[in-house]
Length: 190
Image (cartoon, rainbow, N blue to C red; front, side):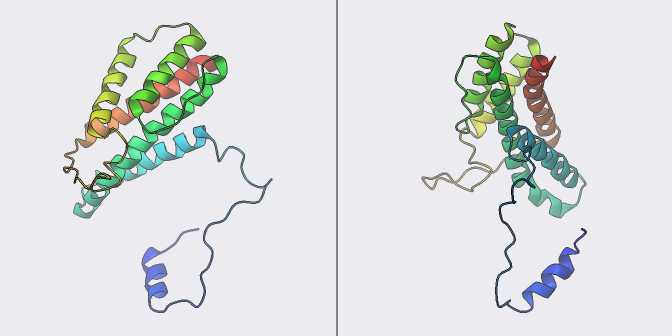
């Protein structure tokens, strides 16, 4: 269903409705898609959101630059979800505990490496893994807890400095990191 946002919102704000219309609710089972609430699906839909938002930001309109901070958050979250998806999948092949808690990308990356090595018996000292770990460290140093692109300041009230973003580098990093996480799953699926 296509929605004309300007008409929808202009009609809505001219008068206050008497009651709210519920706009979100749990789906009835079994009509709900069992795939919907999985790490794999969330990883996929956030990755798609990165593509859609990035295309909008790089389209060149000045007002689309306001999407850069939300895009940074969505990119970081997409990477986190890709790592968590891979961890949850690879862990089924190991005796190691599954750890998808927290938002520390370096901890998640290292945990996935350990899971992958135990599941496959393959080393992870290859060039791509080393490059991806450097990307993770770069992101983790700039945004260790995943808060920098969600809030203007930390929980102590210290204002974060504004981010200067190389869009090409950001999108390439996203592609490498989500691709690497997906590749760990693909190796096990043969």
